Image 1 (tube, rainbow, N blue to C red):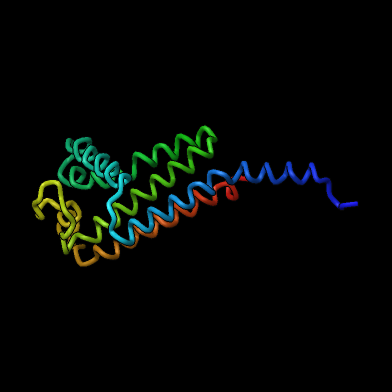
Image 2: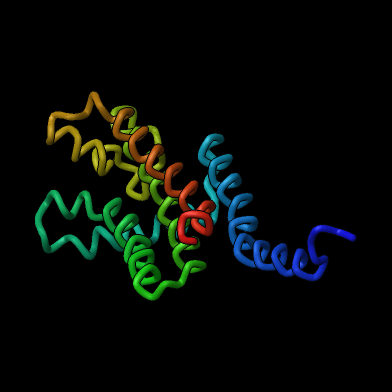
Length: 173
């Protein structure tokens, strides 16, 4: 005789799979986004991020030069962040996980843009390097030599966010 009930064992496996299925689906997506980041591949997710970025400039334009310029990157992080907060308030874990991955992807995007401030090598919509948001912001703040460190900070936040999104079923037991 087995020391456990086969039916009970299946139920516990099914419950665990049910709890972790979204994490199992999101992990390869996070891997793909990291691969795209590492190889400099522009994806459909980056296109979406660019649209949100540009909308941020429009949204924050009335609030002065700094917020107008920062508004693109800020909106990229605020918008998915609002979804995270909303889903948390409603205790909807799948929504939180998906919104965290969205936030992390945008953090990777901002990381690339911020780290490019000195070089200004990324293609811009305007084709004018003097319109590079992070170049303007960091130059005005006297922080241009630290663009790589700022980029790494956003990269770290993105990686941390991916980890939280995938491990959320364990965190929120």
